[in-house]
Image 1: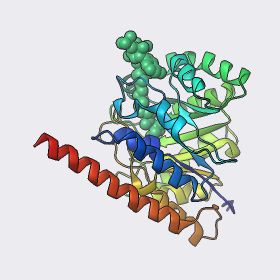
Image 2: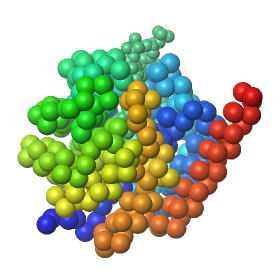
Image 3: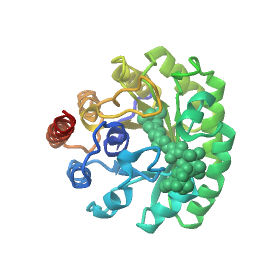
Amino acid sequence: MTTPSQVRIVEVGPRDGLQNEKAIVPTPTKIELIDRLSATGLQTIEATSFVSPKWVPQLADAAEVYTGIQKKPGLRYPVLVPNLQGYARAREVGVDEIAVFTAASEAFNRKNINASIAESLERFAPVIERAKADAVAVRGYVSTVLGCPYQGEVPLADVVRVAKALHAMGCYEISLGDTIGIGTPAKARAMLAAVSAEVPMSALAIHFHDTRGQALANILACLELGVGVIDSAVSGVGGCPYARGASGNVASEDVVYMLHGMGIATGIDLDKLIETGRWLSAQLARDNGSKVGKAA
Ligand code: HMG
Ligand code: MG
């Protein structure tokens, strides 16, 4: 057993959560969400995405959100960047940490970023080069590590190959995504064991969606292998608009409750996090409600 004594939570709600909301969440609500999260003890909050607004209109206000938030000293606010165009937009507003994202499945990657895996890595090379020159930290995502909505089974060898490639290109951390929440504990453990044989565990994170209620069990299986970074979203918001059947991320509140119950430190004030989750749920209910109201 190599369960860690402390875990860093990467809060992805403002990005993964809000990118999948049907009604576009107002910019001030996004800003208030991040500011509230900044007061909970979280160290890393993924703020938004500088992707094509044609593809993800929900996050078209990335620059306004990033400039509007109160950046707390010592906290990190990474953003998703798919290409050089996104990198330039992010840098214009002073972003100092980005995440590039690809998948272990060709079929999903084509739907999500209109590129093969090889093309996506080629696209990231100049982004990562620039980031290195600018002292911008780069995280890397591998999606569909436990299964793909289009291709079905994803061979472990493909997950390992893509994770290894991103790490070799200079990503300081690789987040392994069960994009559609299809995994079960034995599968999650086998996947992490295979990847960590090639990429150091200290450079790995897990990112599990909770479609079938398996996320906490999968996280526990991975904690026992020693993973020390967990992505989650406050109040369980989340999902990729290009992954058929994807639903919310595992809720940050549930992960923190489990970790604290196991004596694993996170530095997070659970009560403040729960309060933020309740506030967000009320905002989303209100925004969705007003959209339905307008449509009717
Ligand atoms: P494309 O259509 O092949 O690219 O999209 P393009 O270069 O032909 O550009 C199309 C249009 O978008 C052009 O505008 C570009 O200028 C513009 P037009 O000439 O038609 O007026 N454009 C941009 N605008 C602003 N910022 C940019 C940008 N790039 C192009 N950065 C592209 C390729 C990658 C851009 C597109 O497919 C895209 O943006 N995809 C993003 C999809 C996405 O965000 N998915 C969700 C995030 S991934 C996820 O949720 C999974 C994760 O959580 C882990 C897990 O759960 O597994 C991370
Ligand atoms: Mg996700």
